[in-house]
Image 1 (cartoon, rainbow, N blue to C red):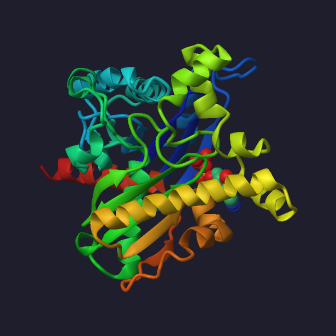
Image 2 (cartoon, protein in one colour):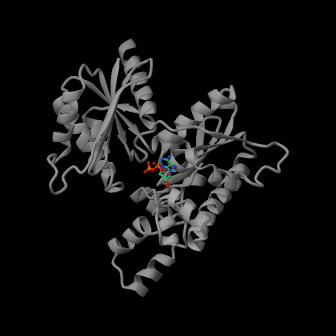
Image 3 (cartoon, rainbow, N blue to C red):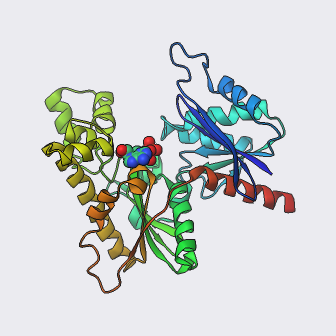
Length: 354
Ligand code: ADP
């Protein structure tokens, strides 16, 4: 069965075609700068049409959808009611869900009769208990406005947890794992017996770890304070927190950890400070998650920094293991697209067996 995995961003489409169940990658590619000045591809429909000319005989499409709120706890076959619900989630994920939806609608038109599946970044975290996902805010904000922790990167955390269980030769349901997805966006998840029980990102991907350009956890009172002090409106403040903070804001140099490492080694103090802050925050979260799970069998590192930068991993793990029961440290390359293909295949297989 040929499964096309689509990841639509606001100005890009990434795709991979898998032969399932063998999990063989048949082809992959991407289109960037959609809708930008000078681009020959002005919308996702045209982009997908272009991609579909290069791939044929598709049996099913798996779409990455960023936000499923509390509406989706697992991957689903897409029908009109699912499309309606994904559209409703646009209110709390205005940067991501509209593009995901455009991809789904374009495929519906371009591939009539081909089954489509939505796989949500938030779904894996729907097992987090209420005492971990409710904020210390008026409770009706949760009930009326859906304000709570949702968490993101769920497909990646779930994928590496499965692969870790294979590597450890133990079933996932006996393991306590802490998975660290450290790319440009960074998040960390506590996985107890295969279920996410807490994660560092929140209502949006801004909460938690210090990231490439996002600040992560800060004192919330700073937001009105900085807005008054610098005379900023909400969108300017939002841009500072999301785009000019984190490693980039602290170092004043770059959001790229490779650049920071080289600079720090040459004596750049702010690059060193950015790395110290980054690793310290991760270490704090690991400690917290070890406490809530009452131990940990393995800490898993994935994504650009997690997979490639040993010095960062070493800094995080140093002195962490003076416990009687030492967690193992594993590096597992993430593969969100393969996870989406697996989940799409599983749904299709179930559908075919009905
Ligand atoms: P994204 O969240 O954009 O998918 P990545 O997972 O590609 O991000 O991670 C980007 C980060 O990983 C950057 O800070 C970069 O410096 C770091 N990194 C280190 N080594 C590599 C590598 N070999 N390839 C890509 N990114 C790397």
